[in-house]
Image (cartoon, rainbow, N blue to C red):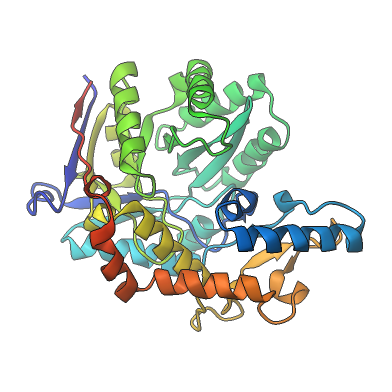
Amino acid sequence: MKQASVRCLWKDAKATQGFHGGVSLHSHTMHSKELLTFIPRYTKSIPLLQWEFDRQSKRYEQKRGRPLDLSSAYWTPPLPGREAFEVEQKQIEDLGLAAMVSLTDHDNIDAGSQLQVLDREVPISVEWSIPFGPTYFHVGVHNLPPYSAHDTMAALATYTAKPDLKLLKELFAGLHRETDGLIVLNHPMWDQSTIGAERHKATLLELLKQTGQWIDALELNGLRPCHENRAVGDLARELGWTLVSGGDRHGREPNANINLTNAASFAEFAEEVRQGQSEILFLPQYREPFRLRVLKGLREVLSDAPDLAGRERWVDRVFFSPNGTDVIPLAQGWKGDGPPVVRYFVRGVCLLGSHRVQRALRPLMTKEDYEFAVTQTV
């Protein structure tokens, strides 16, 4: 019998009673490279921004002799590893629980590796990018053995660079043999490549068919909307999978969900999940309307950050390749903070993401945005 109990702290103030630990899974630090390929999708809804994007793209192509390739450009979350760890740790400890925090940067283990120097109990974890068919998925690989972590990363990178089904199965099987670890399919219902819901689900089911025997759990994601998490719950119930939390924090706000546990170590917690036992707690920030949370997250990314030495401005945290080889911060490629329309857009996002404006907008959001609940026994 596999069980996943999902609780909401705003509905049950005593939800943490009976547990002595909380686990934060899936959050990001400055070591994550977040691709900018999403920009054309978002600019389409803002005509002035679309006009400026097209204009800058043409100027780039005329100057460089090649089209603008956003697949080589990326932004990085604001927080260094230690600060990101402490944000998650504090939230859990404020609930009266002992904290376990697993940081999962995109295809990078620097944060966990560096923190292990200070505390051997910190797991080394990663969010592995898996191209598969017409799309790609993200897999949380938690608690890698320190002695082989870098070799494992090199092997995972081989598949990401050149997908091969046989290699994918071999890698999953090898990861699963590490019994202290945990393998989670992150936000499985998110159509990141916008191939269409039906095609995405068909590809997801094929991935689970090929590799599911080595996947320990499906993730309920703290940054995805309620209806998508409900769909993940339905899929887990239908196929007999365990659910687990995953906050997916990129900014300064801590994860919107955690796992509750009585395990004494991350390895013990991983074993609980592998055995099908998972206690998930959604925290009050998840109750906020999804659109407002997106705006708040964008504000944290685009705001100045005086505490981040050398990365104070958002243009210091966005990188691109002007010649196809070297990678530089946007601050070096633009004059000041860039074209006026971009500056206005950034100011607008920062204004809309402010606490005062969000408080005014909150009553205008539909009630459906606030509600989330799922209880599962499969």
